[in-house]
Figure 1 (cartoon, helix red, strand yellow):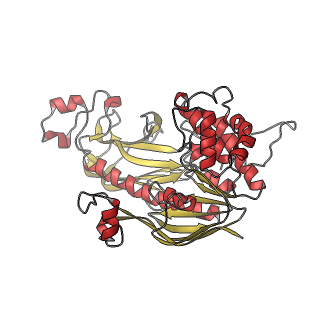
Figure 2: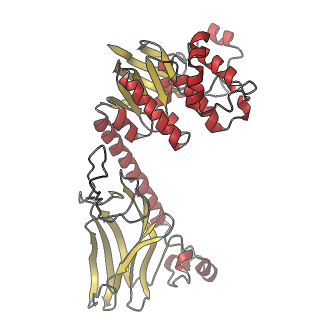
Figure 3: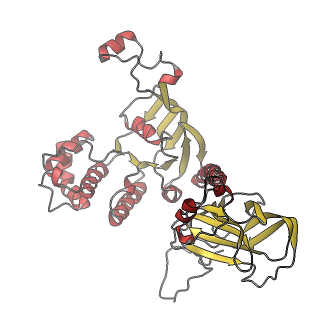
Length: 451
């Protein structure tokens, strides 16, 4: 049996503008021009030809970026608004956790609001009375239920709204990011309630950015993008496709940002250099900043040896800016010298988003004795396992003399991002494993040793 059936559902909104305004709804209806006669540039398609079905008793996930149409879809299913085109059928009583407490009146008590909100959700006064104590206990508001709602904190308000909605005993439960609010203990209580709903064979539709929740709870999922369905089916496959697309867009943004920073890198951002150099001389600044910690990003040096390009190579063998924690990385530094040099040192350094140095080294530290270089060449710094936690990082690349005189110093000019499904904290992810004595047991087996 199908609980929700959507067939070519579209929702079109009229863009706000000062032209073609109607004085009243009556004049708009008489003109017969609410949406259909509007020009394409005067409309916004929140959803376009969306089709899917949800079986009764299953849990269904909807994922996508902000503005992709997820909340609009939920409002259509809840009956808050109607599709512009297409057909949508829902079997059974619906409870929507979309705008919790939307019907609450701030001037009256929580007790009175429970009854009003419950009636709005389709319960009779007798049904609400029967479930009242359970609702208040779930919301943890026994001591405040007779106080005006306007005296409630935002957390109390959310808990009461959720408690009422969850105790309607619906056939179809619609959930829109409600777990993103409230404290951790209440979120766990909500998850327990969803698990109870699943055991009872209720239908649940999740709209969330929490991909872990979709993978854990959902039987099927769809990915919405700009109002259209980009993928549907098995949650792991849909999430994988979504993450791949997100990474492609992140890669493009990082590349554009990196290019922009490097294009302006000739202007060194230290007060000492700006004060002591003319506008023309900034382009070939040779003075080393007195305090490197004050340099946000910049480039300086005599250019006796010049860095012509810095590429970050992933396991695919192609340049990129996105890497998975634990993957390999190669830093390829292309250099050229217009005349023969025998005193040179190459170095790299990694910094996190807070400017903390994660690691730095150079060829002199690692006992490479310079001999000779002229013309063009490539320096490759290979990392077999990039064991950094998830985050954005900056790279220093430099070539200088053994005494530290800079030939070409790139300060924080190259950006890359580490992705990881593990949400550990800090900077470095050491290879590790957990061990437990026989008395300590876990419900599920986990792969304890990192790869």
